[in-house]
Amino acid sequence: MKFDWHRDPINRATKIDETYKNTQSVRRFLTSECGETFRFDRSFMAWIKSGIPKNMGEVADEWIRLRKVLLVERPSHTTSTMDSSIMTPTRRAYLIEQLAEMPRFLTEVFLAMPREQLARAPEEDNLSLIEHLWHINDCESDVYYPRIVQALDHDKPALLPMPDIGSWPLARAYAQRDGDDAIREFVTLRQELVERLQDLEPNQFERVSIRQNGTTFDVYDLLEHLADHDRDHRRRMAVLLRRGVLA
Image 1 (cartoon, helix red, strand yellow):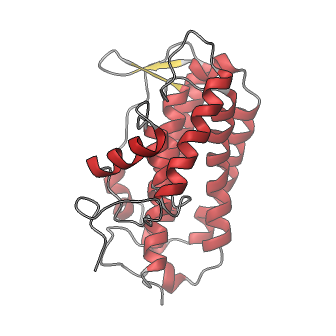
Image 2: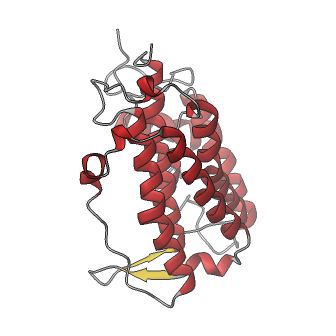
């Protein structure tokens, strides 16, 4: 019987799979393990869903470890909760490493995979693997990379508008294209981005773009969105592999 995250008791050995949900029972467990200062932030929630932690005990231990790092690196007058707006050198390096991991994942798992496997249409996802690959590449080249570079190179620019991504699989004929080309193009562009990020001064990550409603997005926000996007597609592609779609 499948584990019910809403009703079944959670303990340190509870395994994490693609059915994980951010429920009150999960919050109660992590609060009991980590203390009353436990808070979810966007990057930590995405890390839980990334496939790295295998059980809830590992999740609790990682939050405690990160909190200790923050307490050491943060000035004494600041609060002790894990606020995603506070980016320490350790968390900044962790975020960049997450971005650097995606090219390795795609290359190691999908490069040279037979086309008939990549193009097979799954029942549980609206994208085949080859469509995932081209979506990831085109979002990098047409959305995330230009937005990040724009924020770094210009003073408070208007945030570039979001294109009609949903139309891309058909309009750009993803299913008829070569998956290895998508991987190679993505790897080149992501490596350029990571190398640039590694050379930035801390205050450059705080440069902002202006959204249409007048609010701002800083470079950290853009990078967090990009890392979330990586994790979402990595998880979905891993689910397809685990469920034997390619068998």
